[in-house]
Image: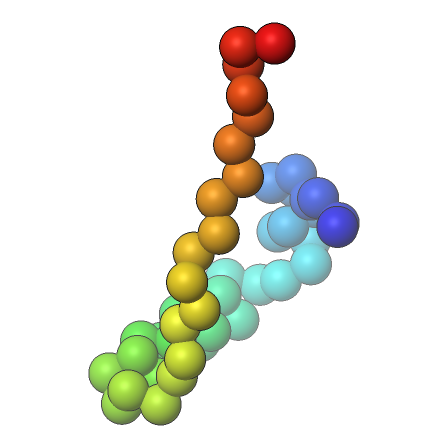
Length: 48
């Protein structure tokens, strides 16, 4: 997994690209043409 800090993220994309991606995501959600998998949760057992 690649982890980017905020500066690296903004070097990788432009604000117009981010806005376009969010608009596309909202349009897909509104149309219902998507599959949302169940959210997975990882927990640590802090008792040990």
